[in-house]
Length: 128
Image 1 (cartoon, one colour):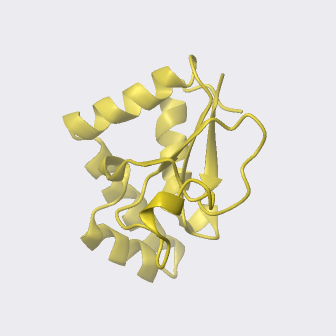
Image 2 (cartoon, one colour; image 1 turned 45 degrees about the horizontal axis):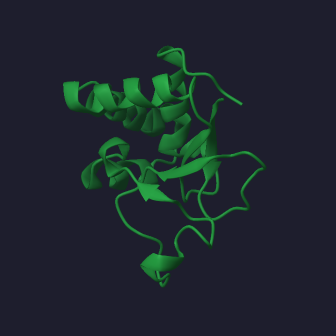
Protein backbone atom coordinates (compact mmCIF):
# COMPACT_ATOMS: atom_id res chain seq x y z
CA UNK A 1 0.00 0.00 0.00
CA UNK A 2 1.30 3.44 -0.88
CA UNK A 3 0.63 6.80 -2.44
CA UNK A 4 2.07 8.09 -5.70
CA UNK A 5 2.31 11.61 -7.03
CA UNK A 6 1.40 11.60 -10.73
CA UNK A 7 0.74 13.80 -13.72
CA UNK A 8 -2.92 13.48 -14.61
CA UNK A 9 -3.53 12.18 -18.11
CA UNK A 10 -0.47 9.94 -18.14
CA UNK A 11 -0.57 6.17 -18.39
CA UNK A 12 -1.34 4.54 -15.07
CA UNK A 13 1.27 2.44 -13.34
CA UNK A 14 0.47 -1.12 -12.42
CA UNK A 15 -1.18 -1.22 -9.01
CA UNK A 16 -1.54 2.56 -8.89
CA UNK A 17 -4.97 2.35 -7.30
CA UNK A 18 -7.46 5.16 -7.06
CA UNK A 19 -6.32 8.26 -8.97
CA UNK A 20 -7.30 11.51 -7.27
CA UNK A 21 -7.20 14.80 -9.12
CA UNK A 22 -6.08 17.68 -6.95
CA UNK A 23 -7.30 20.26 -9.44
CA UNK A 24 -10.08 22.83 -9.58
CA UNK A 25 -11.11 22.33 -13.19
CA UNK A 26 -11.85 19.18 -15.19
CA UNK A 27 -9.77 18.29 -18.25
CA UNK A 28 -10.85 20.31 -21.27
CA UNK A 29 -12.89 18.62 -23.94
CA UNK A 30 -13.20 15.32 -22.08
CA UNK A 31 -16.66 13.95 -21.29
CA UNK A 32 -17.12 13.40 -17.54
CA UNK A 33 -17.76 9.67 -18.04
CA UNK A 34 -14.32 9.32 -19.68
CA UNK A 35 -12.12 10.98 -17.03
CA UNK A 36 -11.07 7.64 -15.55
CA UNK A 37 -10.82 5.68 -18.81
CA UNK A 38 -8.58 8.39 -20.29
CA UNK A 39 -6.32 8.32 -17.20
CA UNK A 40 -7.22 11.76 -15.90
CA UNK A 41 -8.66 10.86 -12.50
CA UNK A 42 -11.23 8.63 -10.80
CA UNK A 43 -12.34 11.32 -8.36
CA UNK A 44 -11.56 14.98 -7.98
CA UNK A 45 -10.49 16.51 -4.66
CA UNK A 46 -10.24 20.26 -5.27
CA UNK A 47 -9.94 20.84 -1.49
CA UNK A 48 -6.16 20.42 -1.76
CA UNK A 49 -5.72 22.37 -4.99
CA UNK A 50 -4.41 25.92 -4.73
CA UNK A 51 -7.04 28.65 -4.77
CA UNK A 52 -7.65 30.21 -8.20
CA UNK A 53 -5.83 33.39 -7.10
CA UNK A 54 -2.85 31.39 -5.91
CA UNK A 55 -2.78 29.31 -9.11
CA UNK A 56 -2.25 32.55 -11.05
CA UNK A 57 0.77 33.33 -8.86
CA UNK A 58 2.18 29.83 -9.34
CA UNK A 59 1.74 29.81 -13.11
CA UNK A 60 3.32 33.25 -13.42
CA UNK A 61 6.33 32.40 -11.21
CA UNK A 62 9.51 32.67 -13.25
CA UNK A 63 12.16 33.16 -10.59
CA UNK A 64 12.97 31.01 -7.58
CA UNK A 65 11.86 33.90 -5.36
CA UNK A 66 8.44 34.02 -7.05
CA UNK A 67 8.10 30.25 -6.79
CA UNK A 68 9.05 30.39 -3.10
CA UNK A 69 6.24 32.93 -2.60
CA UNK A 70 3.79 30.51 -4.20
CA UNK A 71 5.02 27.64 -2.02
CA UNK A 72 4.73 29.70 1.17
CA UNK A 73 1.19 30.80 0.32
CA UNK A 74 0.10 27.31 -0.75
CA UNK A 75 1.42 25.86 2.49
CA UNK A 76 -0.54 28.52 4.38
CA UNK A 77 -3.72 27.51 2.52
CA UNK A 78 -3.11 23.86 3.33
CA UNK A 79 -2.56 24.68 7.01
CA UNK A 80 -6.23 25.51 7.57
CA UNK A 81 -7.91 22.88 9.71
CA UNK A 82 -10.22 21.56 6.96
CA UNK A 83 -7.44 21.13 4.39
CA UNK A 84 -5.00 19.82 6.94
CA UNK A 85 -7.46 17.06 7.88
CA UNK A 86 -7.76 16.05 4.22
CA UNK A 87 -3.97 15.77 4.00
CA UNK A 88 -3.95 13.72 7.22
CA UNK A 89 -6.57 11.41 5.70
CA UNK A 90 -4.58 10.92 2.48
CA UNK A 91 -1.44 10.14 4.48
CA UNK A 92 -3.30 7.61 6.63
CA UNK A 93 -4.91 5.99 3.57
CA UNK A 94 -1.46 5.45 2.08
CA UNK A 95 -0.96 2.66 4.65
CA UNK A 96 -4.21 0.91 3.74
CA UNK A 97 -4.69 1.37 0.00
CA UNK A 98 -2.84 2.17 -3.19
CA UNK A 99 -3.75 5.62 -4.41
CA UNK A 100 -2.29 8.44 -6.42
CA UNK A 101 -2.76 12.19 -6.39
CA UNK A 102 -1.91 14.54 -9.18
CA UNK A 103 -2.25 17.58 -11.35
CA UNK A 104 -1.99 18.40 -15.06
CA UNK A 105 1.31 20.31 -14.96
CA UNK A 106 4.12 18.86 -17.01
CA UNK A 107 6.93 19.89 -14.63
CA UNK A 108 6.33 18.57 -11.12
CA UNK A 109 9.02 20.87 -9.70
CA UNK A 110 6.94 23.91 -10.69
CA UNK A 111 3.61 22.40 -9.74
CA UNK A 112 1.67 22.33 -6.49
CA UNK A 113 1.98 18.56 -6.47
CA UNK A 114 5.67 18.91 -5.52
CA UNK A 115 4.56 20.79 -2.41
CA UNK A 116 1.75 18.31 -1.88
CA UNK A 117 4.38 15.54 -1.87
CA UNK A 118 6.27 17.40 0.87
CA UNK A 119 3.13 18.00 2.92
CA UNK A 120 2.21 14.32 2.74
CA UNK A 121 5.76 13.28 3.61
CA UNK A 122 5.63 15.53 6.67
CA UNK A 123 2.55 13.54 7.70
CA UNK A 124 4.52 10.30 7.29
CA UNK A 125 2.62 9.13 4.20
CA UNK A 126 3.92 5.92 2.70
CA UNK A 127 5.18 6.52 -0.85
CA UNK A 128 5.69 4.11 -3.71
